[in-house]
Image 1 (cartoon, one colour):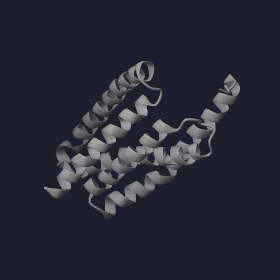
Image 2 (image 1 turned 180 degrees about the vertical axis):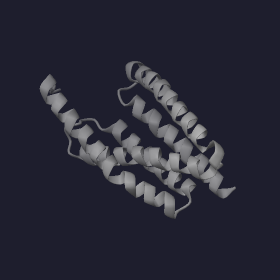
Image 3 (image 1 turned 60 degrees about the vertical axis):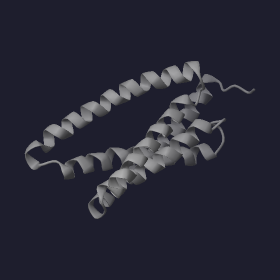
Length: 155
């Protein structure tokens, strides 16, 4: 089992992380456009499905040195920014103008709280179960959210 030196691991992490962030920045306006042109619930559903797939793939990558990791992290970054943009877009569209700012602010606070809770639970999964556990959890949560969106679209 070959180990990375700290410098090599950091360099690889920086390249993978940068790939995800560039993909996210590139696709942010795309999701704004999609939110304008299509039903925002459908856009959120699509982002949830992409999140389900990308988080599952991140969770099963056995070696971050494989070049497929760049593609997977691009999908991951796109799904993350897609959820951020499309969910805010959805909230803005369904809220009355007089409370839109308040609801968007509360929505953001709840999102931050969710990140804190998820980080704790993901850390426990990583330590106690499986190194890919946090990503498996994120994939499951994205899948549940996709199912909820589909139910909303059907009803």
